[in-house]
Length: 486
Image (cartoon, rainbow, N blue to C red; front, side, top):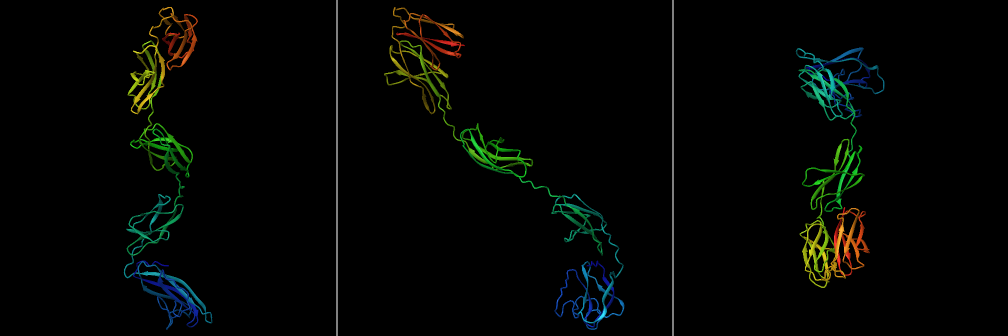
């Protein structure tokens, strides 16, 4: 295959020694385009047939288009017009019918193709030099060279050539770890230089990193202050260094992270605000970065109403016409708008309310009827309604006051008060067989004992610090005093 260049014409010559037989054994010489292919055939007018004349360069027969029966060795030469820069093939075809004939068959030597110019031939076209390939990656490379031509033809492997006007060419879309040959030749005014080449190999492909698969699932067990987040994580090609969930109130800017383990992840978050929209997403972190699942949302429910806790305690300082009511209140989730006690004579139908304040409430009621049973109960009112404590009962004393059987006025003294180890309860003017009862602020009986004399020594060393009620009860009266234990 030949590139004839840009000359005006070509001289094709060769030396030939040939025998053969008449018109049966002969040589045919063709000058054809590079893509011409001759295929053997038995038809009358195929390329080896003596009558086939297309593109035949030589004949020494008066009728047919071939060479044979030449005496000695002779030089055959022909000058033909040149089609510039068109690839050509010089084809020799020997035909032999395997019968008689003169030897030798055909001997060809000194084949020569020369460019012929009508005027002065062009100056030589120098091939590029200093070929180099730099910046080689898995998929690209930069090809450079030195030269003085104004344009060049460049090709990679056997691909089609491309014309460039610089001394460089970048190759892209290459395959990793593959060897390539880069070719270049100078394009001159009337000719091209020979092709020159350099070989290079692209880099090995980097390992493919498969990220983890992260899926965010619907939240469950959503309440007014908590929710359970759910998700799935499937490991990729790298170790997972952290995984879990990110969440925030929808209106907030910053995410809060909570860790979770396993392929099927769950995490319960607390301390949420009731009736609020939240966003959340599962995540998994590897050396290459963090993969996040779809952002999903939930809304917390309405906070339940927690009622206040109301406790009715035992009444104290009961006389024939008054009593002190006691109770405690622990607030719930709603603001308390009213609190205190309700009381009535046990036989009555209507309750009377009296206000009181504080978590530990007291209220003294008066105008009571002597020797009468009364019912009472603590209460607290919120926007949702009124919560009442247990109904308790006390009975007012006789109107004669705290008199003994002999008519002396009863007295009661407690000392020291406050006390830390012991307290002395001294009484006078009470009926024989009186009982002493000690209770705490919740009405729980701490001690109940009979008084055998007018003084009683009470040990308080094992009692919890606080306020206690000391009551002395005989057949006709009840007398109460407070004792503070330190």
